[in-house]
Amino acid sequence: MLSDICYKPVFAEQEVYMRRTAKLLTEIYDIPPKACVITFGCQQNVSDSEHLKGMLCGMGYILTSDESQADFIIFNTCAVREHAQDRVYGNIGKIKQLKKDNPKLIAAVCGCMAQQQSVADKIKKSYPYIDIVFGTQVFHRLPEFIYKRLKGSKRIFELSLENGDIVEGVPVKRDGSFKGWLPIMYGCDNFCTYCIVPYVRGRERSREPEEIIAEARAMVEAGYKDITLLGQNVNSYGKGCSHGVTFAKLLRMINDIEGNFVIRFMTSHPKDCTAELLDTIKECNKVSRHLHLPVQSGSDRILKLMNRKYDRKSYLELIEAARQRIPDISITSDIIVGFPGETYEDFKQTLSLVKEVKYSSLFTFIYSPRENSPAAAMADPVSRQEKGRWFDELLQLQDEIASENVKQNIGKTYRVLCDSVESEDVISGHTNGTASIEFKGGNELLGQFVNVKITGYTNTYKGVII
Ligand code: SF4
Image (cartoon, rainbow, N blue to C red):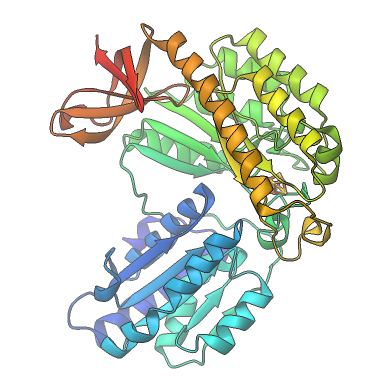
């Protein structure tokens, strides 16, 4: 099977390791060994895990979600919140017992958390039963790491932020059969002061448009109906590249692929969201009428401290421009409550911005300091309890806005992709603008588009197929 795939030279080396590992595994195991991939964090990690699974299957592993059955376990970690890191340490602690039960077990940790030297040092010292630790820019070298460890090498720690090349041709085993992730770029150049992505995922790099189009076309041919383009800041796709393809142009190129599918994308940075992009969303029939535009704060003072590079006024103008062009556009956002130095006066400006924009939905977080980020060194005098009160106030406001949105949506009809089974005769799906609706229907509708009229709301929209 491997010979059917065309690898770029940089992955060709790993293809050799894949073959060698596959052979070695047949010598070690009488039946195919099992591998368990445990993913924490964002969609980028989910997508990376799909590539880890592709490589593992290429080496002859059978995937399992049962850790106790696995001969290889890998934790693909996230560093965005402290809570996520604590969960990872709790999980990798369990490997000690699993190794007693299965001495051949190999355990690995990769992803954003593993990319941090302090984390790698801690694992080296306190978790001696972890065999392999590697960072975000060398994840395609998994076959090499497994091969070397199976051959008896000492524990492997590989955190190099190589030259930032994008490795094409890494096998992928997608979790879904009709909804899929498609990374278009990696890393970030923005250096928001609360974030460590630029330090753990490296600088911004865009894939070549031809590679993306070929992958999108292959996904459509394989039956994918919902393709989400991924990047930390998709709006700046192509910056610094000689091909001259902007994100808006890329969307048009994917929109031109024949087939019945929806194109989504995440995440957009407000400073790079252009009129060209808004026109493209308006004019391309396959592009979702949805913009996730993380505002983070409504206070200019805090936006400056966050290094977000836009202000409240320009953000609101952007929302206005989007709604003028695309009146039915769904706009969602992220907000951080309690950034270091934020006062209640600043927070009130966030509340007023939320009231003004009336988001379709909001992802809200209480600020969590990330080690080595500039914000972690800023004075942060407001207590956690106080931030919790602000947070609740914001949630209450958003609930009121959501109730208003619900009233306006009842009676409307949307084209929906059926994507989940809720019970024996109830399924659910997402509209073009990402709202979820439940309605009567059976398994046979999964992966199909249907028109659904919204009839009510209890925790989620209810509807009927028309
Ligand atoms: S845009 Fe800011 S918050 Fe988003 S990944 Fe880049 S640095 Fe982090």
